[in-house]
Image (cartoon, rainbow, N blue to C red; front, side, top):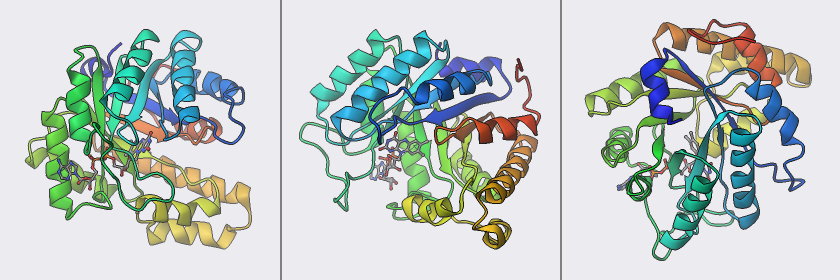
Length: 293
Ligand SMILES: Cc1cc2nc3c(=O)[nH]c(=O)nc-3n(C[C@H](O)[C@H](O)[C@H](O)COP(=O)(O)OP(=O)(O)OC[C@H]3O[C@@H](n4cnc5c(N)ncnc54)[C@H](O)[C@@H]3O)c2cc1C
């Protein structure tokens, strides 16, 4: 099923993100996680896409596993990094042959060791070009990324929103946002996107803090602001992983409840390949229309 259709039939489209396990190089450990996440009845599960052949092959394998064994709709991420048109065409054909109908079109981050993104020979320099290319197949539903605090490389917040509009004009059907911890950033972004003419659903990305080390890593990797309120809750218990997770999940529950009160069209949880935190959050919020058990 195409994800855009969920937005027309359901009040709140629920989704989770998983990533190919890089460390041990096999998906065996992900299988039980996928089973548990699928048991929470999401509308779809998304699979990230990394540079390097190994994780690419795994993205296809995981997408196939989700579709065929777990019977969950899948959103396959795809980036422009290191691939020309022929390679992108190849991977799109592979996704199609596995029945994948939904692609999250991304530019991608510079590969490790490089400080800026370089357009690959015969490839794409911005996500909007990839959206355009994918839409030319006439088969895929396409989503794109949005940034409530602006993308780190953007000349300004307004310029970034204009670039989002270009991605939507190129044919994207929905937007999933980067993680954020201050809902007011999301509302400001949603309003600015609306004023710029972005008229597709914008789904907030929620990343529950479940250990202390994540906090500074998150801030440095994607530039998300960690609000004082969250820091104040986590700092005093920083050496107690269980308590950090409890407080991080508590924060995510409150964040999610507030987003639902503000009528978001969906919720996208960054699962970090763990089902427990997402399950706990969902046990504590009431997602409109969600099927349980
Ligand atoms: C939901 C989500 C999922 C993600 N999944 C992955 C993943 O699986 N794998 C991965 O490697 N990364 C992933 N990322 C990270 C993403 O690849 C990076 O944030 C990347 O730096 C930007 O990708 P983009 O698609 O937003 O790029 P773009 O939309 O191309 O934007 C990149 C920068 O260029 C600017 N820009 C955009 N279009 C134009 C234009 N036409 N002219 C001039 N400037 C322009 C933008 O303002 C921005 O600063 C994900 C991010 C999100 C939010």
